[in-house]
Image (cartoon, rainbow, N blue to C red; front, top):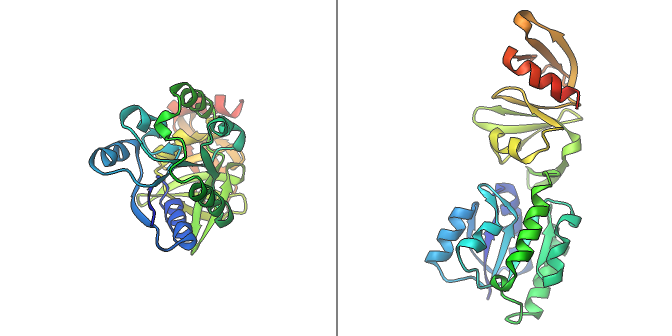
Length: 255
């Protein structure tokens, strides 16, 4: 039976994908789950290619297209992404399949049946032109993450960024707070999240908090030209904006 490789930097998403793959066919072997361009390149240098790769576009150390620049990937690839469909339509012209997160079983089943029907006749991914990859890479660079996939018990939930009031770190973990004041654990560090979201929507106020402009209930002028922010979430601590961040914060508010 088939051997597959999962390349995904969100732990909850990779666990969910593995579960769906085994639900489709428990005889499929998941050889490994990798979370970065660097680890994937190393894996392909040391192992024989699998039958199929599921590859997230945005990995912890950059876009997955960097893998193809460093090593051959002599097998079909199904890309997974949280980006909107219009950003990756260029894949279709070369019959490269993709799945939008959060992935449903029906969508995965369709992709795997397509792979089975085209088995060994699918165009190897290394034959995809560099021009195509560069085109899609440039399109994706202009996109910010539109949703976060989080785990709720045994289920996955997709949270659009429009519903997120703020992100915060606590005891080496990162959480998001939604408009209904629910908090969820996310798989990324706050530093990583700050690279993935639109800076016009979120502002990194300090090492602990990154706020949406919809999260603020009140702003009070504080001592020594600082500001005090009261968040909409009941019981949440007030946040002090240091004097050196006040100009940038005011400019962000005025965007």
